[in-house]
Image (cartoon, rainbow, N blue to C red; front, side):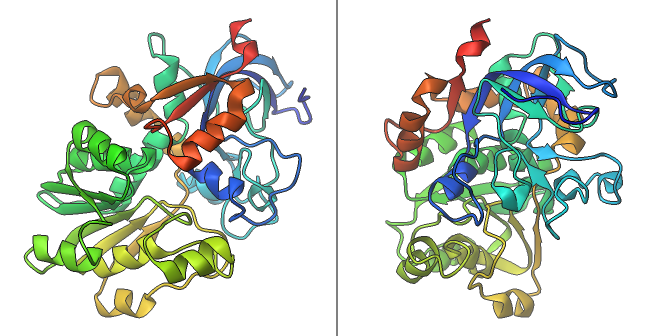
Length: 366
């Protein structure tokens, strides 16, 4: 049972929590300093049970969604709305801020795949869920929806652009959907799992291709874009990418680099000269083998970051409440938290057409 440790803490009784694709990087050993006994989970909503004496923005009984970023709200970066890069919440790091349940590399905070969670800086992150919002929609606003939206935002999409998304997991699905909000003229998604491709084709909607069936993916993209490449490319895969044996051996099996950089290779080489590559797939904080020379010689812009959920929440809440976005439609499985091990196995092995799993803790029914 977590306890108040700081005057700005809150204790939240978790009512919904999710397994994220990024959790698989922890599960499979790609993120350094993931310690035995850590509680995973950075996507959760719940009811405020207790607050510290300095908490004024939320109160006991409020139903809140909790952004996956832990941000102080006062540092140099938070004041620039870069909540994913908070300089105070994760003082041992020079890049990322703190993240719930995401190893000591990201601050060592316990996460929300639990019945209760301690939420630091409770005047900053936790956001009261609007009346009438489905909690299944709310829990996806803690990470998946903002990350997909920021992926499209960072891609610099101009009216009529061709947008290519690597990965048809939840974030890739949401990035493809959000690309249309920025004016995309064509959206293409590559993956090698047919049921995911079918899902994103219907949900986004978009063109889909199985990269196991098209030969060289870079050459294929060039062929279907008049030999120019895509204007904007989104890497929504990160360290778990398959498709290149050398990258798989060195990045996923041997851990000689910070995960397999296959999707990032393909993204750089599939982009049009002068295009933009947006990276939201998670890589470890060490070296990767990437074709940086191609990026420079093609005049590409590359952008990436952990999503600043708090910055995006007002507009995304509006999109959900007015029906522009329907996050809960990507949820395919709802299971008790006690079955979390089966949930991880199902999601990792892509069993039973699993897209997104929401877990319900026993305490949710109190």
